[in-house]
Image 1: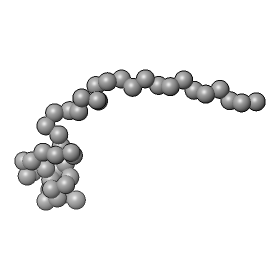
Image 2 (image 1 turned 90 degrees about the horizontal axis):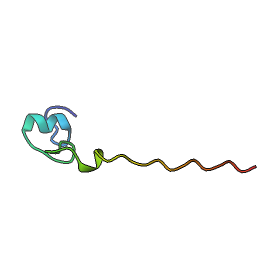
Image 3 (image 1 turned 45 degrees about the horizontal axis):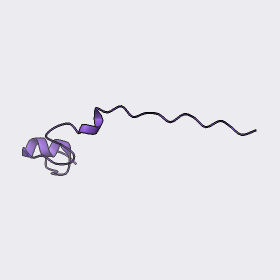
Image 4 (image 1 turned 120 degrees about the vertical axis):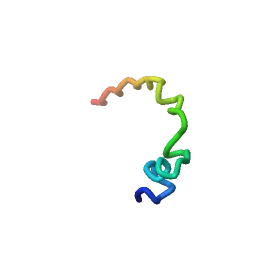
Length: 44
């Protein structure tokens, strides 16, 4: 885990490559707001 590890974000920055850990653009689903489901009522 470090600058020589190609699977980590830091390693990809040093190596100049991209991948899952270092995408070229931010993922599109990060911008969407996730709607929260209403909490279930407790049974008595």
